[in-house]
Image 1 (cartoon, helix red, strand yellow):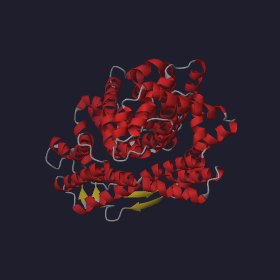
Image 2 (tube, one colour):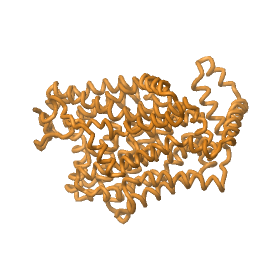
Image 3 (spheres, one colour):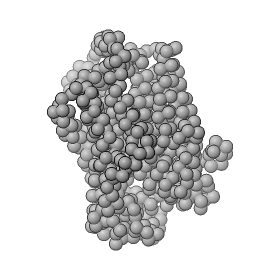
Image 4 (cartoon, helix red, strand yellow):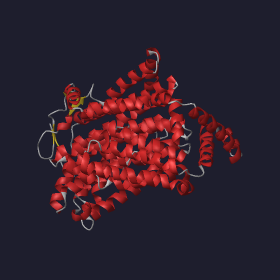
Length: 570
């Protein structure tokens, strides 16, 4: 039996600084020393176990059991979702239909900067609305690669794009979780979040263009970035406040996509071919060997442009030959995913049936042996085996249906399933290590100590509040998990500081969305999807400053909403 302590070292400040060591370890190893993600995760897990045992007095056996539960949770359902999402994509590739999908997107726009907005932000937002948990990053990452983006650029773009939709992801799961834990109606929390994350939605498309083609690209494509950003933001605001938390991202993503199509009907951006040439040259340099890279340095922009122009002409020719039937079949897998997930999440009879098949497993040796600081048993020691209701299982079913419709032989589909598992082997290990780290920190009390320390700042907590969600999501890779960790703490701290509890619970959710891009779990998913396993440190270094900048913007917004901008709130 083990009971958590908020200040095991006598001081909350000292205890919190010690509790931060595992997080500092993984961020330093990834960001400064550029270790591979699985080694950084393993080293940080060891540090977390040492802190749990030496500083918090957690028995070694319970600390190791916590790690095993976290590792299993990382594999199922987290990596199960990513695994089946990438396999579904592979089925479309071997069928030959993915080339039709590329051509269909080409019909909307052949400008890679616009494609980044449409695929990574709008289509990725739709996937986040339905599945979440890394699936949007995996699917849209490989799609951008197929359109000519370099692996690193594709990964960074999709990581940044997977921000604003996260709060309402997986049919509103993060917000529903916060409402369940705090007793605040989740529709009320969603309405608050719907007045925070739209600010991110407004600016993210422009940031994506900056990532793809710099200031020049933004000057040449700002109308479509603006129209999509405004429409997505308005869609989030309206749906979260007046329609449904569960449907918010679906409405916003579809509205953003329509806005892009309408804008491109009346206006065409300049410089698309030149931008494609620059991306092509970058891609060629990335895949070349050292000698080829040196030779590539002498390749003229005109030469690269000729190669890209040839590719673009071939793609345009393919697009011109598309019939409505081919376009429909190209989008069939994703339309199927939308239908299946909508029915599974929103049709109560089916939703109840699927959830009713879940198997609750009290973790052997751990359940009922860990008490909170208040002396009550910690409920997270019960593992929920969602063998049928998991988004991964639904994606698996969709994959077999797609294989049948696309006439992919069962043997070929199964071989792709095995090949995908082999490809993801290091990602499996990394995510298992990261979730093991998160569970050790959570069950030993380290996470709550950090949260309590930050919450002790009084009225200034309104400014720091989003940072808790940011840290929670960075560690666990899930905004839902960040709310499970800190929603109640945010509520209590707000009441003690005389602040609006709903505002700070919403701030935890909103802060979490920009922590996801630096989560080792998500970095690994992105790296694996685009074929650069082992380069998660490079992705971390390219995303950390975006993440810090956006969390600062949210901190300022929440602080202002707690006083001078209170009129913005419901």
